[in-house]
Length: 201
Image (cartoon, rainbow, N blue to C red; front, side, top):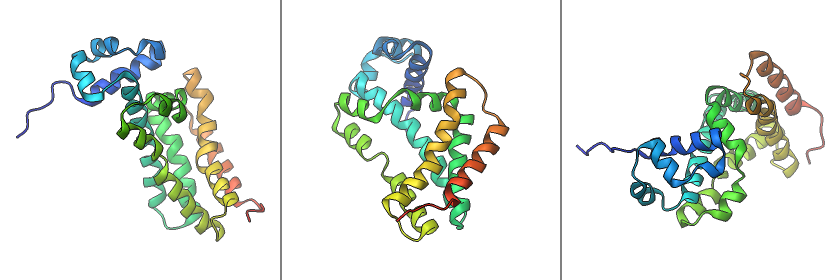
């Protein structure tokens, strides 16, 4: 049986996230991350290579968690409209259940992380990060509208991602709890966006 890790990568990423959210990006130095996580600085460098790659890994983890919740919800039903609505609500519910990750996703842009990442595997992961979601949105557009035209895909992305993220942004930034009423309003907006009469050719 392998020996348990004294300082698991998850605890190091949790410490980095806490520093970024509580004290800002500049506070998330390797030294502070080591102090908060209890991991030696040498161990952190060995696992992550650099501060920028560690921060990228932290953000990637949050993105993948959110994406998986969305994809899992969409896969639970074969009816395309209900699948798209479920995916959108899963984004909202993820932010409700995991506000720290949700706030983190608002704090970074992938382009900024790509610019600073140094490890080739981190760069590749950032570049390919949205591929599963892009494929899922293309499939939903085809099932909803008959064709996955750029306009149809954009409409699905608006409904499944842009509306939920817009609904959570202000409450998350201000530290408010997401409400059931807001979730109901979001569902109505998502259904309207998906079923309206548009030129999606």
